[in-house]
Amino acid sequence: MLPHEDTLQEKNHQLYSTVGAVAIDKDGNVASAVSSGGIWLKMHGRMGDSAIIGSGIYADNKLGAACATGYGEYIMRLCLCKYACDQMQSKNNAKTSSEKSIDMLTNRFGKNTGGIITVDPTGRFSVAYNTRSMPTAMITKKNQKPLITFGSG
Ligand code: ASP
Image (cartoon, rainbow, N blue to C red):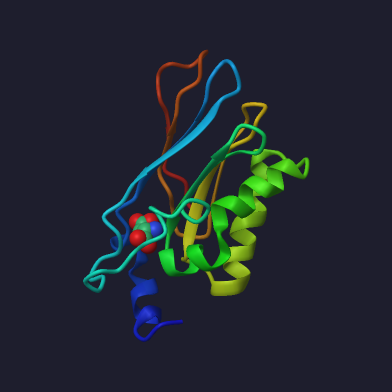
């Protein structure tokens, strides 16, 4: 843990600014996208996880797609999105893979450290997080009106 991170973690809901998305089309092509301003009071020149393939973002038609939010320093060390996608290749669905990924993040770095969204190659979506909440929206072919959840952990 870096100096003052324990204090920052208590205020974690104010720190993040990432918006991420995962998608799958009718042919089974998956995609992941992310936009992030990083973490509040970040050091000049800090590189977060969002821009690093396999850490904050990953997609492969054979594995699925994932996008993470939270402490980039921890997410990078675990290559969290690649881990989640590798889990989906091992016959786990999106839900199990997301949960395993966040369990690993929590076990290694504690609660209030991040969240992940995933879609597996069969089109199942999932969300897991160890923070107080993580708002998400989902659109499917059948449900064009976004299904919005705020979640509370
Ligand atoms: N993961 C981002 C970073 O560490 C922050 C966020 O998720 O909002 O830069």
